[in-house]
Length: 489
Image (cartoon, rainbow, N blue to C red):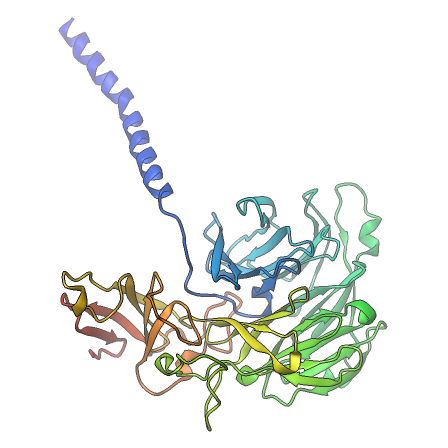
C-alpha cells in the first residue's frame, strides 16, 4: 500500500508539471503584453516601392524592418502594424479609398498581406504566391485587385482578388522589376525595371473560370533607342492624361509612353541619376540625385519647378535652431539622393525619403514655393549600441535632458535622442534628435549604399566603417566610443 501511495504521488506530480509550464508561459505572455511600441526611430525604405500615402487622409506609411510605421506628419504621431511572421517588409501600398494597406515581405516563402488601416491595423487577408521575396505591390484603382511582383529570381507577377482569396492571373517575368502602377480604368498595369517596361492586361482574367488562374497577358513597351535603360519608376496617368504612362530611368530621363505603348517623348532631368516618380492630374514629381525633386506638367512634359533641397550631409543641428527656411546651401555641400516620393493630392503634400534615411514632407500647394511641414533624420546603417543617459541625484549636473539616450551606427555617427521633447528644444530638422556627432569628415557613410541586393542589404555592410560600442561614465560627464578599426575615443 505504501508503494502504491508513493507511486500515486509521483504520477500526480508528473501530471501537474505541464500545468506549471503553462503557468510560466502565461506569466511571460502577460508581461510581454504590457510592453507596447510607442515610436520607431528609423526607416528601411530601399526604393520607391517602400513608401506610400493615403490619398484621403494624408497618412504616410513606410517600413522599418518588420514594422509598418503609419505617420501623421501634422502632429508627429505614429501608429504601427507589426508583422507577426517577423519577416521584414519590402513593399507596401494604400488602397485608393484609404481603408486598407497591402504589404510584401522579403525572405523565404513570403506572403502578400492586406491590413485594415482603421480599427487596430489587423490583418484581413494574405496569399503566398512568391518564393524569395516581394519587390513591389499595388492596389487596382477600384481596390478589387492586388498585383505583386517577386524578386528577380522569383520571376513571378501575380494578380490577386484579395477578398475572395484567389490568384486570378499569373505569369513569369525575366527582368528585375523595380516599380508597378495600375491604370486609372483598371484594365491594365505597367511594370518597370532593368531594360523592362511591360503592359499587362486583365481582360483575359475577367473571363476566367471559377477558382482558376489564367495566364496574364503582357505586351512589352516599345523602347526604341532606350532598350538598354534601367527604368526605376513608373506611373500611369490620371485625369486627362489617363491614357499615358510615365517612366523614369536611372540615368535621368523622364519618358512618356502613349496608349500604343510607344515611347513617344522624353526629357532630360539634368541630374546624375534618378530613382522615383509620382504623378497626379496636375504634376509629375521626379526624384533625382543630390536631393533634387523636379516638377513637370503631365500634359506636355513642360518643366515647372524644382523643390528645395533637404539638409546637407554632415549638417550641424545646433546651428539649425532659428525659425524660417532651411539653412542656405553652402559651396561644395553634398546632399542625399532622393530615394522615394509619394504625393497626396487632397492635401497637396509630397513626402520624400532620401538615401541617408531621412524623411521630409513638403507642402506643394504653391509648387514654385514649396515649404517643409515635417522632417526626421535617422541612422542610415546598422545600429550597434544603445546607451541610456543616467539619472543623476543632482539634476543640475546633467549634460543631457531627462529620458535622453545615445546610439551609434555603421554610418559613423553617434546620435543623441530624447524620448520626451525637453522644453525649449527646437531645430529645423528633427523633433527627436538633440545632436549628431560625426566621427571623421567623410560623409559617404551617411548615405546608404546605392547598389542594394534584392534583400535590401547594403553591399558595403561588411566594411570597417562605423562606431560599434558606447559607454557613458556614471557621473554622466564623459562618453567613450569604440569603432570597428579598434580605436577608442
